[in-house]
Image 1 (cartoon, rainbow, N blue to C red):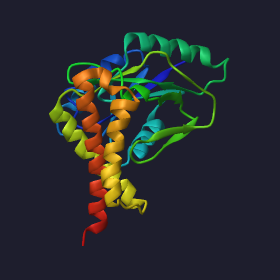
Image 2 (image 1 turned 60 degrees about the horizontal axis):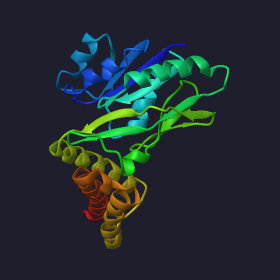
Image 3 (image 1 turned 180 degrees about the vertical axis):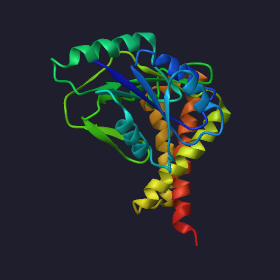
Length: 250
């Protein structure tokens, strides 16, 4: 059973090589690129990947659905450019896909381990993440502009080994991404007619910190866990503050 690997990118020359290398078990690798201005496209083509350029326009689900249409194989695996499939996970994917036909399974969820400031996080909300990233091409579509989800109605299972996520390698990189994604999320909420009260601007960030640091045991990651909990709280604050700003602009 053949697998297509689909990767979304925008100026990811520092990370794309490691991501593509981890997809060596796929029968084809497709890059859906948001018109990168660095060497992302050239690196991908040099590794045998097929590149389609398409404007993201703040809609990740549309970008992934475009990738679904371009995939040639029955099974499709989605990765972001800052994600990696470990050797153990790649073996598990190939084995499970071969076994799937007789079991009627249409998709697989993955946990994800986040790399944050020179080490992996073991606790916090990221340790609870489950992502549907491998499924049959015809099983369903992606929905949601930000924090998008692959919606399928058929039977699914969860893989044992996680995807490795290298999104937050430095604090500077983290702040840049938080600013970008908080703007997209605030814009999505604004389009849905939502507003943010003073109470929400205060309570949402506080709740986010408590959830990460205490409820999901982030304190066990020590200093790294504290910094990450504060960063996620900052993201929550920016979403609500930007939403409030959008609703109060002249």
